[in-house]
Structures are given as C-alpha cells and as structure tokens.
Amino acid sequence: MAMVEKKSVGNTVFNIAVCVLTGAVSLVCLYPMLYVLFASFSDPAQLISHVGVLYKPLGFSTLGYQVVFKNPNVPIGYMNTLFYVAAGTAINILMTTLAAYALSRKGYKLKKAFTLGIVVTMYIGGGMIPNFLLVRNLGLLNTRLALLLPGAIATWNMIVMRTAFNAIPASLEESAKIDGANDFVILFRIFIPVAKATLAVMVLYYSVGHWNAWFNAMIYLKKRELWPLQLFLREILVANSSGGNTAGSVIASADSDFNYLDEVIKYALIIISTVPILCFYPFIQKYFNKGVMMGSLKE
Image 1 (cartoon, rainbow, N blue to C red):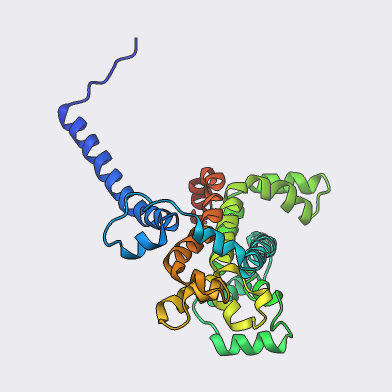
Image 2 (cartoon, one colour; image 1 turned 180 degrees about the vertical axis):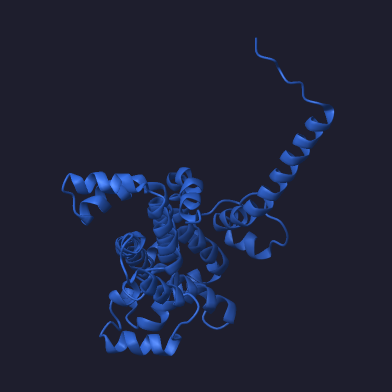
C-alpha cells in the first residue's frame, strides 16, 4: 500500500504564495498585450479621451481593422513577410545544419580553424557601411536576396546545433557507413531526426527573427513593394509619434475621414503583426526545453 505524504501547513502556504506570485507576474507580463487588444477593438472617440487602465474594449468597433485591410500596403507587407519567413528560415536551417554537421565530425584537420573563424564573427563585424557596400557590390541591393543571404547562418545557433550533433552516439554513424550511407544520408536520415528538438528550436529562433526584422529592409530595400510588414508598421508608428503625417493619413491614404483613427489603427497593426507568430509558439514549445538543453551540453 502506497504511503500518502502529508503536506505540512508551511508547505501549503508556500505553494499558495508561489502560485499567487507567479499569477501576478504572469498578469503583469500579459497585460500589455491585453491592453493593445482591447484598444484595437475600442471606439476611437472613447479611446482618445480615455486615461488609465483598460479592462475591456471601450465600446466595440472594428474600424481600425477595416481601415488597415483597406490599405494595399498591408497585404503587400504581409505577403512579403510570409515569404521572408518561409524562404529565410529554410535557407537558415539548411546552411546551419550543413555547417554544424561538418564542424561536428571528427578527423577533419581544419575543423578547429574553421570553427574559430566562424566564432570570431560573433565578436568582430564589419559594421553597417561595409555590409551595405558588400550587398551593393554583389548586386543584391533592392532585391529579396538582400534580406536572405547575408544572415544565412547565425553563429550561436550553429554552435548549438553542432553541440547537439556531437551528442549523437558515434555508433549510429558508423553503422550507417557500414551499410554504405554517405554524409548526406547520415545527416538527413539519422542526425536530423535524432536532433529534431534542437532543429525545432532553431526554426523558432530564425522564424521569429525574420518576422520581426525591419532594419536590414530599411537599409537595403528602396522599393516599397518589397518591404516587409514590420517596415510599414514602423513607418506608421514613427509618423504617428513625430506629429507630422499621422498614422491615419499614412495607412488610410488620402481619405481625411479616417484621420481620427490614429490610435486604433496603431493598436490594430500591432495585433495584426504579432498574433500570427504567437500562434507558432504552441507547436514548438514541447521541443523547446529539450532542444535547448541538448544543444547546450558541453562537449
């Protein structure tokens, strides 16, 4: 018969205190998003005059979302961002995986030299102007490749992936070689399935990075039809805070009837640009702890 452990009063009080404190911290972290969500569905006139905490939408209005989706820049930015996330993450994962596999194999004489050369890039960079000149001289300026190729590998992510590959037993590789498997077969049929948790975390890191990226697009892209959504969002927020062209005038073209929607439009844009990537987290979360720990173990 299993013994039931009695919890003391002190343990019960401690557990309750931890739950209350955790709940309070979670609420503090969650409230900014709730505020933005409530404000995006609020009546514009009531929102402008409101001061203080928002517990619910002030009235209910979808005018902000209607104005946002009427502007042609938003669908263009959305499609561009989805392309950059999909294509960029695919390139990142492919290049990171290949580099990590090569640097995790034993017996290569130049492995340490290549590893050192890659690690140095974490601490020493050319800077913005040399990078711009490089992109321009390669003919990538004002092309989608300007956002995809220069950052094809994140050094830290590659090191985490390499460490995960190092943790895979050498016997699996040896058995595959005995059966006639080459390096590509070993990588794609053995290493990647075994290290899928770390791979999932890398997908999360890279996709979030591409989704939130706007700085490189601002530097390398002058064609507005290539801009990601975040760059349009930045333009609107900067215009709103500068006191010049209002967010309403930027997003709602020349229609002056929509200029009073500045605040609602701003919050609606934040929700539109944030919710899709938030929906991605639940599918990756189950791999997160295992993937990070597997890739962070010391060799």
